[in-house]
Length: 88
Image (cartoon, rainbow, N blue to C red; front, side, top):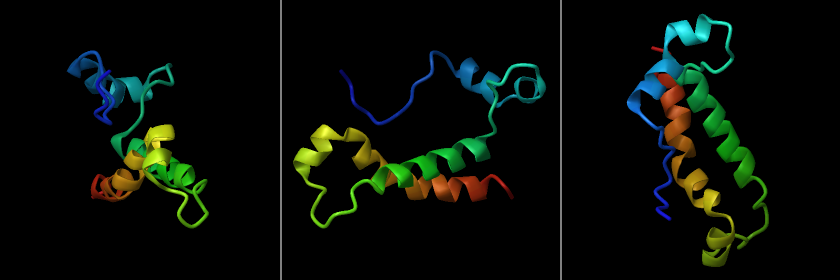
């Protein structure tokens, strides 16, 4: 299994649809703005990392048991910054 730390959609058209105005304004609740998605991901990453609140609780064995911890630690700032970038 390839662990790249990325969400991969079936096709670029899926991303375009989910970010489209018609999807966001339509009757379905599948649409989400890029700003909102970055905000949600950054908040989720931080909430996930808060479970590791003891000194020295993150180690190589922790990363194997909780692989999302590495992604969350490395990329929460990217998502936090991206939400502000898309506002302007």
